[in-house]
Image (cartoon, rainbow, N blue to C red; front, side):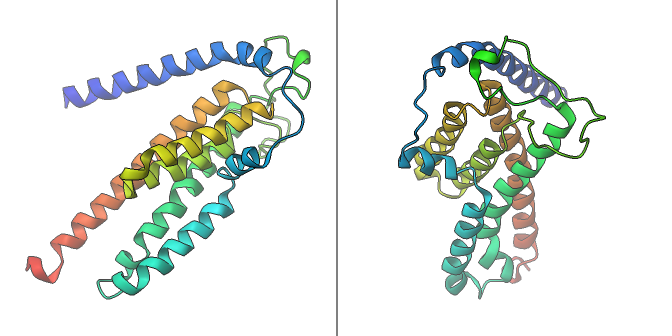
Length: 218
């Protein structure tokens, strides 16, 4: 129990240090992207689409259709399991990120980067308390992208570099577009990591329970 608490505290400390480090990058990133080209390329839009939830709803549905003929005989959960995970990962990560936005209430970067004086702006709770419009911490697109990527890394580990590159590319595009700070992107990645770890833990528990109640275990 003590070792587990120590491990949790260590992880929390490392997350906090990482977030502080990402905040230190906000100003340098502003300078680096100040002269970014206004026109985006198709490959940039492709990476940005990794943070669009309907994409993963389609991928999840396709995976269910792929698994159904070979897994339906074993049970409904086995038939829809992988596709459902691909949907839940980004959906819950994106949903939690929106809730965190409304709690933290830190505004997005100004449209003109030169207008940013290095100080963050926070919206008061009296102003649109249940709307995340205009808020940026954490990045919703990045949370969705990493939510999908972390689940896919567990389902298809051999393709891990592909999934992580896709999600990281989405986060990078949010920076290039000037709609998020580096710390927004980092926070989104942490949210996705925590949520998908919880989703995967629940999945494993259900799989163990199913195995215990399987006819072969009797």
